[in-house]
Image 1 (cartoon, rainbow, N blue to C red):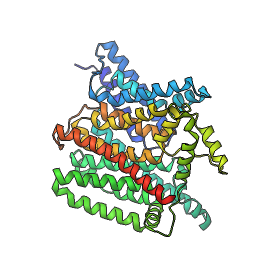
Image 2 (spheres, rainbow, N blue to C red):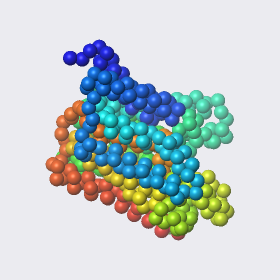
Image 3 (cartoon, rainbow, N blue to C red):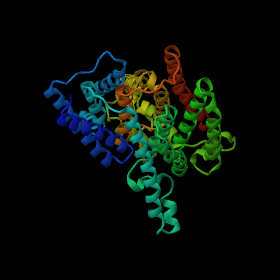
Image 4 (cartoon, one colour):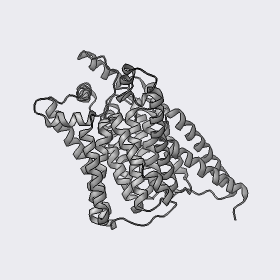
Length: 439
């Protein structure tokens, strides 16, 4: 029978976990404090368990720990790159600075995350994403109202998120994944009637948010994820096909009709008179050019910035940009071993999550696989928060059971592999086609 002291530690641990889930979408100076409180609660509850004789380690043979092992492999490869890096201090600055949370959460998972209410954590994540969107709109309105027209134009587009210190790509990714989580909770009927009424407005505000921030990546990923659900419902829940098809048509229509960067890119690709021009292609070409000498080993973690900026300078460009591609960045840092380790992290998510999480983990994997081709989300703390949270918690937090809406095990594994490979190949094919049009 639990004592009051035990109940207090358990409640504090669950409360800190929910607070951390709520704050993942917020700027790093907020989410960092929330994560610090979670670590403190985690250490406290595990020490208390050890003192009372209730401490137990997880089953290290469990499939749920696959993303954790992939994370550790990624860190081992990254640290080993210091052996040949021109500036080894940059390796440790990146690993134990910006990427530290990528190490802390997997280590905690190896110790044992203990029982956590998984669906409650996901609801808290949606509430946090929704609060972030509403705060963004309210703050932007307050910021724009007293300004003249010139200043309003300056604050639009890419600067929308800079008002409250959040990079647009990471904020958009949070919003997209928030919608994936929302759909998942609707399907498994984990939301109460009052919650559904409130959260039905979340997708509407999300689409408006993405249109305002003009994120081509977020809009593209949203459409792909919606098509995935249409494909799934065609086989398992036919009554939901029509609503989701209508959603795809509405969102797609808004994306290509409302003036924004996504609509402009689609128009440019379909037009034979206009060359598709994006700075990313120049960045990727510079990265490819300066990495020939270290094709297999890379420059060492965080050591690629100097040769990349030197390559920019050779072409008369004064750019501070990174690679804008997580796979390319891993290749430049640690060679093919880093790329393999990153791919193992991404594609271990559907297999580690179990059948109960299949409908949630597969679209999240697709979202990461697509976004990593456009943006390097591991170079900044905001992206690391979101990525680490889902990769670890999806695989390890299996404390509460949900109804099974999923295929048989054979179809589950086969379809997970097919979707993972198809996601990556389709994005590579898209980049090759656009690159052809660009050249």
